[in-house]
Image 1 (cartoon, rainbow, N blue to C red):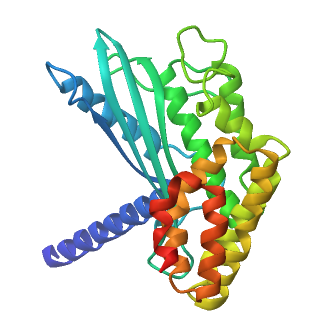
Image 2: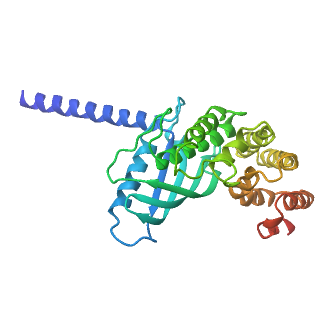
Image 3: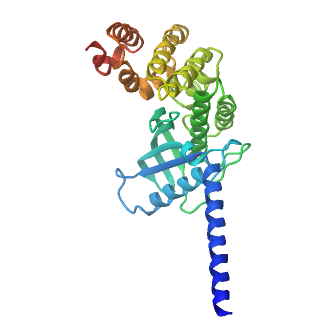
Length: 307
């Protein structure tokens, strides 16, 4: 009788453990992000506890929240790095900048491709240690959470646009809504028109205006018809990537100073050079000419195409 009880106890324990693991796997599959957030306080003297607290709170805020209605398997999660560099501190007031990088997996391969690599130098905010980070679509309580959520939706927009034609529209609209709410907040920097050609307002305006359709079509073709084809047919995938790029010339002629052009270079230029490395001599020459015209300041990064 005692043996039977032990067996039953072990059996129940196994069931509980399996159910707990399944529940955890389901939760992991639902969350969209595998975000690593770093708060760099090297420039600031004094105690560091508040920065550790801030870092942990931001990690939980991003990774433990459901941001979309889509289902993400564990291997489909968006890899994301955010580094907040604290430049000044006065009490609970911080002056900083933030670097955002995001990657998405390429179909049927171990390769991940960069979808966003952006530096935002305007992030001043208030933060009190252990204060919960809150977010509402109709009310934003701090410039820190507003900025983080803005970039979450920007990342989702670029990610979904890379899988389906203009699939990220709803997320870009969410980011636009955040910009609209934040513009009226006194002391919240980075949100207003004409303050900078590379601030949050400039980026979301560029990606949501009518002229961006050319860029967004190119973005889809580059990823879905190009990179995602490479595992099955490397030549076809490479050809589709190369054939998607002339749309950038069309976009530049309409918006020569658009922030999207430099954002594309920061995310993709080294990858494009690597893709061209397998092309024939004529394709390399044509690619070098086109990319040099698009990015005359990037001749060093394009040098490999001349070989």
